[in-house]
Amino acid sequence: MQSIVHVCLAGLSSGMFIWLVASGLTLIFGVLGVLNFAHGSFYMLGAYSCFTVLRYLGANFWLGLLLGPLFVCAVGFVVERFFLRRVYHLALPYQLLLTFAFVLIFDNLVKIVWGAGSLSPPTLDLFGGSVPIAGRKFPVYNLFIIGVGPLVAIGLWLFLERTWWGRIIRAASSDREMASALGVRVPVLFTSVFVFGCWLGAVGGGLAVPYTGLLTPGMGDTIIIEAFIVAVIGGLGSLKGAFTGALIIGVLSAFGTRYFPTFDMFLIFILMAAVLLWRPQGLFGEVR
Picture 1 (cartoon, rainbow, N blue to C red):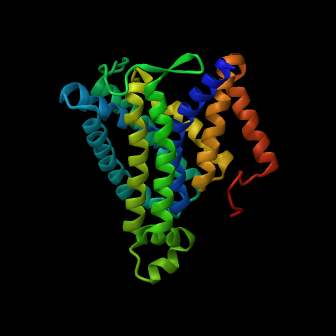
Picture 2: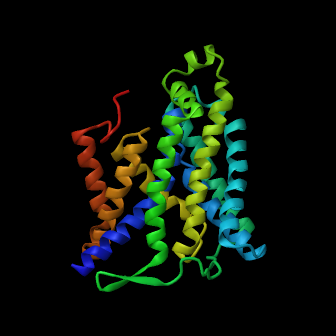
Picture 3: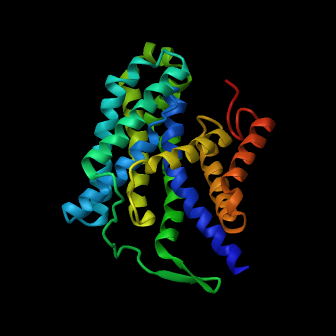
């Protein structure tokens, strides 16, 4: 029983990291209609930027978590304004090719700036230590992440459902031509949504700095695969589906790693295949 409780907690903390990345990916697709394969790279850049603020500026973790994602937002603005905007009207494969090109660019950029080896972030006293749960100790920081995920989900729901800007975003995602006819500056709106999605991914990367222990070039490649799986299972464009999918994948992966390590990723892909056979649009997706 103790082992099961701790595996579930580990799965929830892992799932919340995936959710932070998948939320931005889902938001961008839901509004812009773009599958951003480079979203994992923004996660990676967020982690490295936060690391730089901590290591070289001597700032505390919260300041690093504030400043690091701002740099990633600037990068996201350049990517959307000068590159992605030119392929909105093209077929999905062209968008994937463009964003995959940025994956290669950012991976090599990280190697040039920070080196090709692994980096160890400085030790943080924030949420250090562990607490006893079900007779065994569990890291406090993991519990913090478990709490952050639902708060982000609630914040996104309130933003999209209860604010004037959120209503405009939903209107533009449903019918961008009508929104433009009513005076909404759709290109500016799309840029802001893309930058906000990049910020979500970068915050996930910043929060991963104390969690992962090592920063490596290409660290975004693994999490973007998991984020895509989560988005597909939950339904492309559905934030509720992304949150639910992240929980499922996080817990399933934790149990797979603990009890079936050889079939860890196999179980996840089997689940995705089963969901697609049952509901091709995902658990909460809509037929387009």
